Image (cartoon, rainbow, N blue to C red; front, top):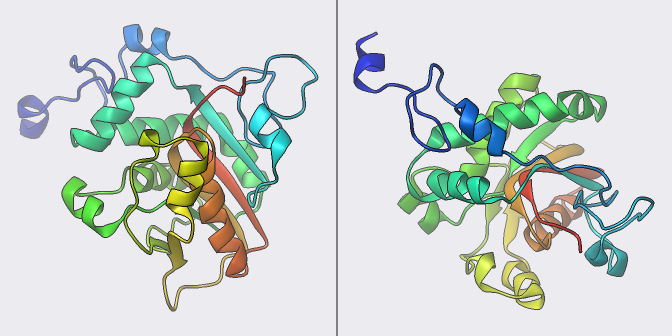
Amino acid sequence: MLRKLLFPARCCGCGIIVKEEGSVCQRCRKQLRFIREPICIRCGKTVAEQGQTFCYDCGKREHYFVQNRGLFEYSDLMKKMIYALKYQHNRDAGIFLGKELAGGYGGYLRALKLDGIVPVPLAEKRLRERGYNQAAVIAEEIGRQCGIPVYPNYLQRSRSTRPQKELNDIGRKNNVKNAFHIRKNEVQLNQILLVDDIYTTGATLDEAARCLRMAGAEAVYGLTACIGRGF
């Protein structure tokens, strides 16, 4: 009780006091922009027209993941929330995103018969600086809500990489090439859900999925809090 008085729960969007940790106020909830149909059947990006099967990127190339889905458009509010999660130690934002993803995709995830959820990892240096992996915070809340085991250390970074937002499409692919490896002596997972905060070109998710497939996974799916547009 004393902790709640001293450190009340705050909205993950604007910071005002709210009743529950890992939630947003009504004003911010009205600003959330959910991804709507039509979407690319492979990566989940919004596409221009009904009946359009793939976005521009997926129309040009194959992916190592079976399918990715996202919940929110990368709006101004979502940019603010992701920034707070990554750089302002606002773990509640990750819990909120995990809850929302579990609520929106819980049935879908259970139907996949997943062996486990694997967050896209951070490099060790960035993990030390940040204190936690934002993708793992989201993944752990999804796992808790849906009753699916989470393996936060199953996939690891082999090396540090530049922030993807600084690079173009080709640069992003080269930046994450061979950037992941499976932790030694881990259990074998065959049906895997990869979780990350943002999907843009898909380079990071694709390279992580490639690593998992090369290690013997039968199918890799993606779930991301935010996703860009496909046109």
